[in-house]
Image (cartoon, rainbow, N blue to C red; front, top):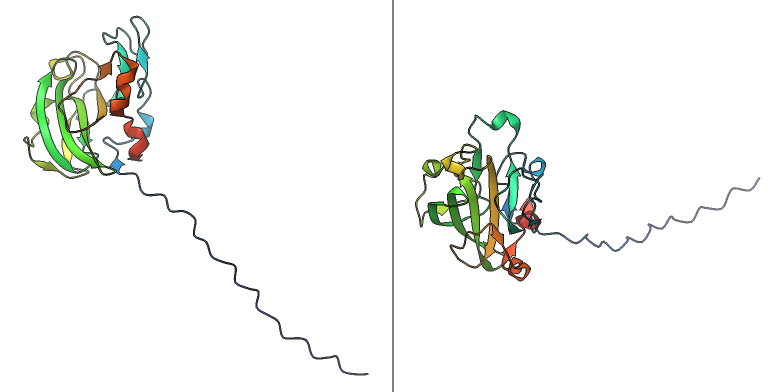
Amino acid sequence: ASPLPPSPEKEEPAEKEKTAAPVRPAKPFTSPIAKAQRRVTKKPFGLEILPGHSPVENDRFTGYHVGVDFETFENEQATDVPISAICTGALLMKTYANGYGGVAVQECELENRTVSVIYGHLNLASITHNAKDTLTQGDRVGILGDGYSEQTDGVRKHLHLGVREASTKDIRGYVKDPSEISRWLDPLLYMTW
């Protein structure tokens, strides 16, 4: 029997061109509160609140909601709920304001533009930083105020988080005219969970 012809050398398959999947940049903001994804249940960004038509019982506010409300869990009503800075930047102010109780405003950079971050319904005494102090992303801003107390201006215990274009002390949580919404940003679009 004749020997089998030598087998041709196996050619290595041509290496496929390696194309990397597009790298999505990390979202610049971090969560302000533990379990944040589970907390946005009542008032997302842009929701129109009308008299008698709100997901919150006996709501006294009306207009377009220009922030995101992070609700508290039943077991947190009598405990401290810490709130963290979502970005790095200077504290512009901390004050008591109608509609919020305690509120802190921080200036940050977002995609090469200046924004103001509003943390509403905080226990004002828990905000230990002063105006012009730098808060680093993840630093404790304060704790939520007690529900239905002066600390929250009489509303439920929750965090109102707003992001406003520009460095400003405009802390409105609602606007009447829908054309004004464009001055505000939905923080969830920029948040890493």
